[in-house]
Length: 126
Image (cartoon, rainbow, N blue to C red; front, side, top):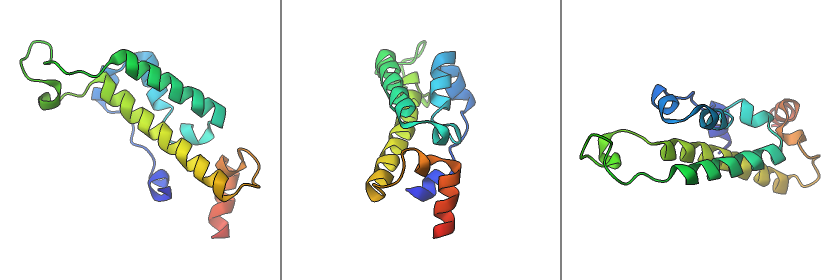
């Protein structure tokens, strides 16, 4: 799991940019590196709540694409719901990783393990 985190998160695609409104895109973009690494636990919790709310509002598409008889799943087009879901998965994965680290190092100061300095120290200790 750490390896995936170090690879970084791909930037938003043109299709994602088109599917999301400006506010949704800003929320989704915060789930990418390096922004998510700099986020406090409380801010991350708030971001996850906002993403869940936005995804719920978007609703999962089940009907055909407008102007077509082809369902979303077969059209090749991705919906707002899909992109917000991916952002939510990235944020939840970061939240899980932080919880895992806290349980592995219960004496560590809050936030230190997530700081750039903390990550560098951890790599040097290996």
